[in-house]
Length: 432
Image 1 (tube, rainbow, N blue to C red):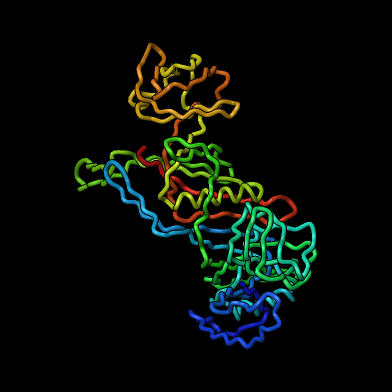
Image 2: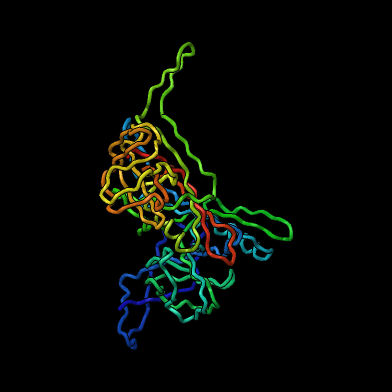
């Protein structure tokens, strides 16, 4: 039989904590009166519940996912490698404390600076409408918008004075099962998944007026895993097509440059030696996600990018091409208002998005000039008739990748409303 016991005792292994902790367990048990038979103590499994940082960040927080990737560029293409199995998670919390809370927090910082601690991932927490009793081993919550792991940890948090940590034994979509009873009573607590982390930059403290102190700390998570899941984007050539226009949470910028070496002897013309046959087209994309499910979907999508490795399709969300006549269901030749030189169409990928949300992705394989209009040939027919009034966007598609190894989710000050996160990251076009 499996034997589960949760010890709430304390183990002082010194400060800073030891890199390896070796424990010898000696069992003195009388098993004759156990109804379930003799327990299995051959190879006990131990889960360490490190001391948690219990102060909830109500004045803002952020979470940076750091990958490590390498881009090797040639004259005509590039190859991309991901060098980490999973992104490193780096939560950053700011808390505002009264004098009594500040004294406790400073004592925590002096004892735990540089050591392993438990960090609640607050934006994945679920606030209960009911209570939790000391004997409870199952808690009914929605686990579909958070990183709840079998063998991991959670915290049942009512306030910074009343909380309890527990190891997770099983996870279902609508509940978590604990390895042992939680051991305390809680009124409408928040259930939050917990990660093991270190305060890598220490604790920064600043005192303001009215006896209020603000403490900021950045934590580096050590039990990182790569999140699996599907963000639900349509696929074109086996890659995601980003379908949301960039949110205006920051300035939208684009930059086009030809990578080259410039040789200038100071006397004559400057000689240009191109490094790549294609131009570097950089853009910035930004998102504002509202609600825990939307934030979780964006995190899963960022994990799937694997840093700079995995490409995706980015529409321009601009009316790049203007249709002049309707498109028949079997048509491959489409007439448009002149938008540039014929060579500028060839090989480009396009998205036709209708006002009802229907999307078609095609490649332009040929182009011809007919009077004052241009005719472009699509790689295949749409299979449905499309009128001019139905079109929302007729825009180019760019095949891009992230151009940064760090992606930061910013969470504004916590209030009574839904969870909100903003994300802004640069991207770079790659040869399609």
